Amino acid sequence: MTVSTSDFNMSTGFEMRVYLPAARLILLLLCAPLSSADVVLDGTTGGTAGTSVGAGNGFTYDIQSSLGNVKSSNLFHSFSEFDIAVTEHANFTGDAAINNIIARITGGESSSIAGRITSSIDSASLWLINPSGFLFANGAVVDIDGAFNLSTADFIEFANDARFYADLSNDSVLTSAAISSFGFIGSAGGSISFTSDRASSIGEDRSSGQNINVNSQFILMDESTIFSQEINVTSGNAELGDIDIYDSRLETVEGGIYFQGGNILSVDSTIFNRGRRQRHRNRFYLSRGSRRGWCKCHSIRFGRS
Image 1 (cartoon, one colour):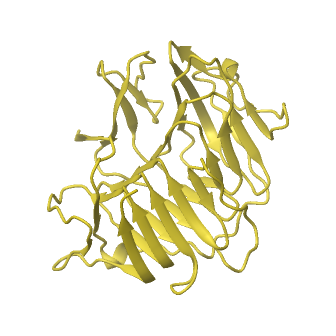
Image 2 (cartoon, rainbow, N blue to C red; image 1 turned 180 degrees about the horizontal axis):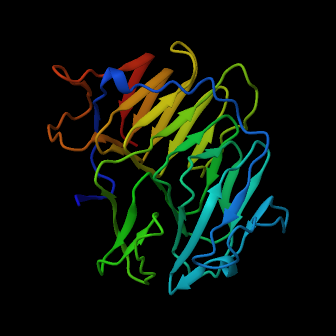
């Protein structure tokens, strides 16, 4: 069994590297936003298996801490399904002492997000893993007071070597220790995609503090860590639609990163394909040889805040 982990800490400097085998480009623009969805507990950290999270306090899915398991400042949740449709709103709640909301999706299907994900816990960060992947479509907004960490990893590892696995056949340990890394067992599987469709007016204006916003006019990432087998960020039109990335880290394990947009702006961010260690500051780097790099866009800008 091969196990790999990666440090999730964002670089204080700026580097932008993209490596993408052409055969692995995934075009998901034909995927329409969900008209109905569900958030379902698997019963392993709290609640009853197969039970849908109910509405409450003005939210479509009122994900209370009583549905999970609290270990000091870590709140653990486990879902068999996690899909948020257009106009739906999933909100995490809990005690003010919670620093990390740690959630896994275990049902074996990718998660589609076209609504809002928020937290009522001040300064808490959200960690969300689903080995089968994620698709963020028009209308998707993540607005967390802390950092947003998204991955197709098989587990989250902690400073005391405990692991929280997405595969329920593995023994997970719920711990109060600090989070140290995402980890993969063997070859990674799912991909993470952000697709903005200009043919649809679904979406909301950007506002300060949002971690993710997918709109018909733009895709925004701010204070987010995205770690996956493959990452696709596509606006639907190579001449129109902005992609703005601030204070974030996008990292792939084996596959590549694909951008398509009118204008791409990256500030104080790292875009990185593991296994390649060349450093190119303030440059957009496309590899040659056995791999081909792709950035289909009108313009690219790099900067520091």
